[in-house]
Image (cartoon, rainbow, N blue to C red; front, side):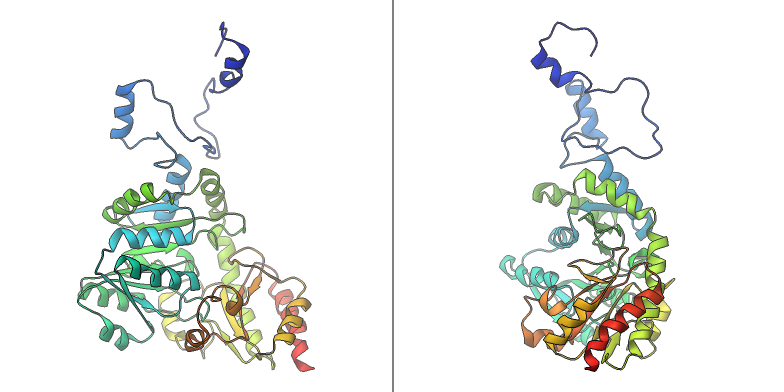
Length: 394
């Protein structure tokens, strides 16, 4: 601030607070850790409002906007909104397009907390029906006059079923509804649902997009009109992501294609190897020829079949525990999509709150293990799983 006659207690708040000299062209975008931006006067404030500039962190932040620009390009939408997590993205998107009296038709095999969220919409007068989205005839038969949204994941969690996005989008539009697709498991490297007719794409960027298991963040991608509605609601709900997470996620996404391609390649190799192991009852991955949607997956996916798989072991808790303890390079984690391979037990984690009867209808047995495949040597991964699975031979 230069020479002043202010006291120390005032100057300690102001000296060094504002940059001197040109600093507007860094090689890496800076991190804007500020709750607010200054304006010169009321005229400047009105100008800032008119250009949707930066005033307060909850309304806009440069790091969120920069990440939104990248996500929009990758998902091929018109605009994106960055949220505090994947669940915030789902809830913000759906609540911005649904009203009391509306009906949601949803795939029955979803992330457990997504199911909880959808079921909770009943308190707002929004009904939900869960069906098998791999059954096109069932989708057509389940549409109601008040159906406003069809909701699905590109690849379901944790059963790794594949949905025909283009066909489901056509059904939705023929009935005046919108299709919302969670693309977390595949990322835009494998498929871009909006190009297949989806109206909204959701991503938990926490997972494969960021890829380093150190950020919780989500995104909504859609038309300018829908994103404007979601943004208005987001500002009131406070589901905005913080600048540091947005900055970190954008950094992680610069290498997303390199990582995810390796993860998809490794997942296909691991799935094949697990299928050949005598102690594995069943493997779920679209690369396998016996997968029920293998031909569909070949048609709609680019570059690979996703980095997620699940496999079934005998329902023996003691031996499953022994299997988990024997793994050397693969660890249990309540997340997915990171550069290291991890496992999770759906019955004990993602679908813990889902009643057993409903879980079994989805095919989620106690012996089912979900695997998020990393970028390790595929030979090392296979060897680690094989030596751990030996506990079932005893």
